[in-house]
Image (cartoon, rainbow, N blue to C red; front, side, top):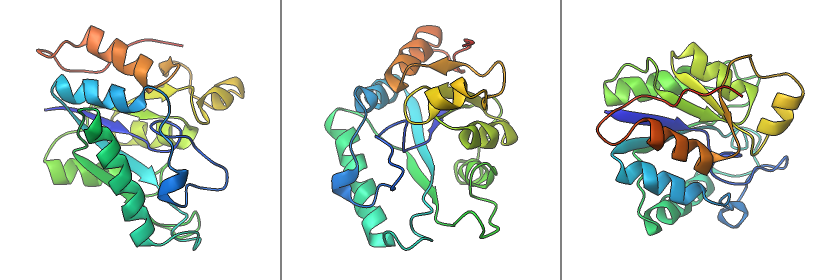
Length: 191
């Protein structure tokens, strides 16, 4: 199985320091939905793994998060893509869970549910915590400069050697160039 794990805010859609609290606030980044569609059409399984502490903070409820994710799923499907699953951590930073990135609990849950080993599975994020969680889970971390990515790189908060791309569309273009439908594996490129 060719699998890729994507963070949500800052990778697929615009991020906000005030959180994405409604379906109306969920705005896809240019080219991200089409990038997911290209992955799907090339035989990749796409899973979203996202921290959603707005739930614990009382900024939105589970029904609203379901509506946001329903809208995202429909938007991806409208351009020919498919999400295999959406995994979220509902906890706040002080809740002591193991699923909140930078811990790898969500990644381990994906591995258990799909019955796969995550070794070298590409995991795309825009922040140090995404990269740390991917690394801890044995994935191959990949950074996009959208969301918090450019700032994290400029501030030196991303480990040396982590491949960085302008956005999800650029990353997917390189992934598919290096890994045609008959092959698997992540792109290898340094920033």
